[in-house]
Image 1 (cartoon, rainbow, N blue to C red):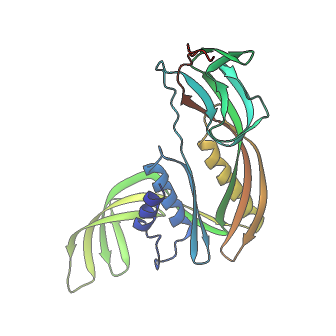
Image 2 (cartoon, helix red, strand yellow; image 1 turned 180 degrees about the vertical axis):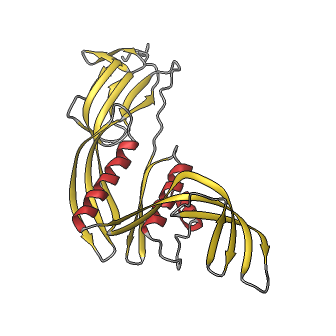
Length: 279
């Protein structure tokens, strides 16, 4: 995934000796990567420090329940503190508030009685665990964004010097993007006639204080994490660890405690007692 991300960053101009990207450029690059690799990445953050970019990402771990007849343990998908267990089958060997490392067995498919294995089953259920993230996010003090409203039109425009005269257009867009198709252009006089496809834009501008930028950074970071969670998962706690700012932006470090589904299945062999006796 690191090699894939490096290729994507390079293709988006984030490379050695490339021009510095502004906040909107970085947001666009992150959105493009998340959209393209939504089945492989939960979230991605790009932090600009001086002449460097620091890229942090969380891989998406898909763990579909396999309904075949193979016997299984339930193991921890991540390092976590067990928050809750909803188990349908299997022998629970780790309990609520226990700390588990990735791969630790939480529910065993081996059913034991008095330290003797009596049966082998397919462990089934859901384990929620408290996991932790340290997120770094940058937000600009001065922010400008152009938002497409969805209104658009085709317009014929007569251009003379720096004047644009829209023909048969009774409602002008204050802000717009334009795609032009020149119908006629005089090579001597500064006159042209063209057909334009115009998209209306809404311009959002902010002039933030440091505190306002910090609050907005936290809000964006929190929403990104919430968008990656399912209905059972939620943010348990968050805390700002630190922040620093320059003339252009504020960078905030935030600690998150998140309750997530940490269920992962591990296939095991059916237990069979040995018929051999030891003399």
